[in-house]
Length: 73
Image (cartoon, rainbow, N blue to C red; front, side):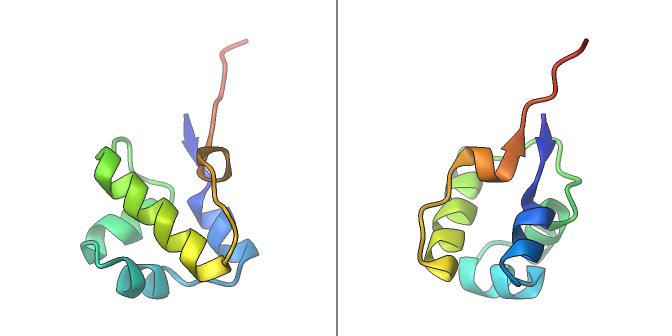
């Protein structure tokens, strides 16, 4: 699994700072995810990120927008 949060933020012109401020999550948590470096995340945190992004872009956001599955060949 790989994060795609950085690409999502760039595509929608959202800074990690803005996501942090709007979400109310810990700054380090948001910045870690925004740099695609988190290797685990609490479901509540993931839900907060997803719902905050939906609010910011005024469109539904899915897990497919934030994560990609990488299969071994």
